[in-house]
Length: 384
Image (cartoon, rainbow, N blue to C red; front, side, top):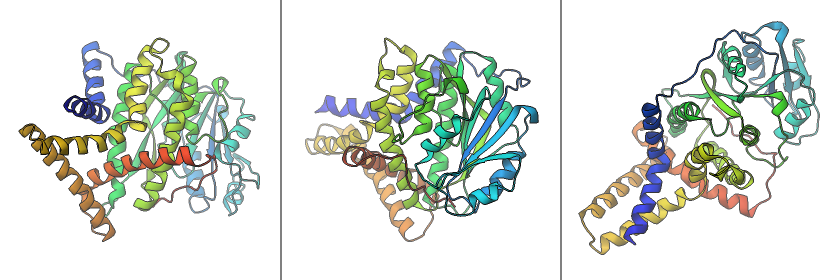
């Protein structure tokens, strides 16, 4: 029991903190640093935005898109609005600089992207969400990395705007700051393990359609490229900013879908866990993704009850201290949940509350994956 407790506790620590510490130490010892190529490389590029019923924000997105710095003769803009039943398509049609693709049928984002990709003839394609806004230099910063022929994809940084009066969804912003740092270190070591759909790009020739029931299509598309032997580079100077989820319920809905997509991706991309074929990548993939999406949330439950049993057996003061630490942490999370229901904002409680919600979402996502039919058509989470 003691061995099981300590090995489980180690895996939990390694998943959420130890891997980051190890990455940092490896980079310091090896002297690896972020490689920043010259910014004068501007290959032909297509920017794709998939939008579904975004009439409230689409005009702002268009203005932001057209303000991006990139040679006019080297860029195309395609907005696809399949299934939209509001004025999204009509608003886009007002802008002749943008190619609009629309079908009344709603088959899901990935089906729309597959259709658009058949129209892409440029060297590079950039994907960004309709509800995110890019910094003006984003495309220039992304494109420069494609001078390196080993680079198959470039991932931008996701930033979550947190208001002063934010609720517990502000935990999403804290999470992404840490996640961004891990991605930067992953990139410096070898490759990012999966790109986020808010802003990422690929070499068009490397695009491989993923199944229409893929829940994390951006993650799958990018890792299929890594599977071919290319790297994903992280570019923090190209960033997409979005607001946090409208409320905790919306954030939980989004996290459960991501978790279901996570376990789906682990199954579909099981070849990446082969250390003989992908020695460095498999280490990064298992450490950064697989553990979070599979056993670690279960181990948190196991550790709690094992710790309780060891305390009852009076195995030593260390177990009493660890039990007390767990008790305080989960008490803060519960208090955060209770105060959230009362609309009382206590920021110090956001992190334990959000952390526990994330791990609950993983368990719910695993259950959803194995008990329901998966589809690429899903209801988007509402944003603030």
